[in-house]
Image (tube, rainbow, N blue to C red):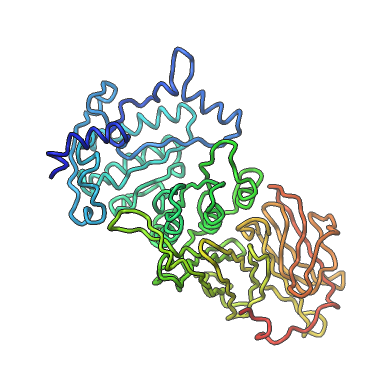
Amino acid sequence: LLARSLLQKPLGAFFAASTPFNKRLSSFRANSKFEDPETGTSLGQLVSELKACYGVASVYCWHTLGGYWGGVSTTSPSMAHLAPRTVMPKPARGLLEVEPALAWDPAAIFGVGAVDADRLLQLYQGMHGYLAAAGVDGVKVDGQSGLGPFGGSEHVAEYVRAMEESVTAHFGSDRCINCMCHSSENLFAYRSTSVIRAADDFYPSEPESHPVHLRDVAFNSVLLGEIGTPDWDMFTSTHPDAPMHAAARAVGGCSVYVSDKPGEHGGELLRKLVLPDGGILRCAQPGRPTRSNLFSDPNSDGESALTVFNLNTHTAVLAAFNVQGARWDRTRRQFRGDAASALPVTAVLGAADVDGWRHAGNRVAAYAHQAQTVTRLGKAGTLSTTLRAKEWEIFTLSPVMRQPVGRGAEMVEWAPFGLGRMLNGGGAIQSSSLAQLRLRAGVQGRVSLSASGEFVGYCRPRPREVRANGVPVADFSYDTEAGLLRVPLQRASEKVRLAVDFDWREARAQPAEAQTDGV
């Protein structure tokens, strides 16, 4: 009540001077920073320069579902054909309990410029047509859940339908990132766009927000992953918590993008995520918490790690994060640190934690990215890792293929992990096999990789020879005790086929299964 009476003018003056949230869309064309006839500059010229001079493959532009934060201008002649009108919000009581600021935010004071359903397609065609003509490749559509209080679920659905129709016509349905869209009226209205921001923003200056961000995205993906593709948001690759964020994106099954300042990049970290041609090794599904994690609180119970699973074509991946010691305080409306719960935690994981993996009941080998160790697990084996606050580990799991040789008691074992220097190196494996050679006294393991780099795998016995695309690799290394094979290959985006030959006479009878289990 005060926000619309006694405090309306001072709050309105503050928002108008300090934030963009009361501003409205006044034209489909870019402003004078991008479009200046006197100097000959244009948005299209900028997009062309980005692609031609800097190798940028795709350029996206941002707008809200309502046009801009405050909707569409009711006074601009350029928008008159849309007949926008100012509408005041009516947030539900339950929504105000979750977000009390909706009672005094800019929309509550100024309202928004809304467009009727029969003109919504004109709104989006005007924006998207101009952007597409300038060479823009897609859009990020923000502020979507904010429309509910201005007309309810059908009102939101009308906006979403018109937006998706225009996006599909101008860019393609896969060229849209939906953001601030977790209300049910948004989620259940999507028909063609599928990328969904899964949590709050990456806040570089709020260290307490990063553990909460990872937990929220993982848990939200349980629902969002059934509706679309969860998006983990951008991060800066030089941030103190960048390694933790990078690991999360590697197992998240999502796009990877950073908001680095030009010239300020964590190149070593980015090379663990991105291939030389700009591609990534993307998991097959949205990253989601393991079943054992679903009813714990990895942010503040002082004992649980956040454990996330995902799948690749040949391998599975498990990640453990210590995100204890931070939480969102609903009373103070801010992220808060909690030193009492920022304790070391131990995660115990096994193939059974990878929901839906067809190899979960078989023998597998696990490669720990940080520790660079390999563990052979039996059918029910597990492994453990202890992590301090904000530490993490990623495990690549690969099924152990076995080839009997000799009299049948001896076995050759083979389990490729992929590119050892990539956070999701198992995503590079396209196929793998193990078979006895007919013309020679030996067994051969094969693996096809979508990209090249240092290869790691588990095998027994020591390989007799390793060839990459038919060329012998003399400087491979082998740890006899662990069974860890490393093959140094040049980092590149080109495919490579590895052939690993074993002399079956060096194979030995396998010990009892219990002795080969992990922890």
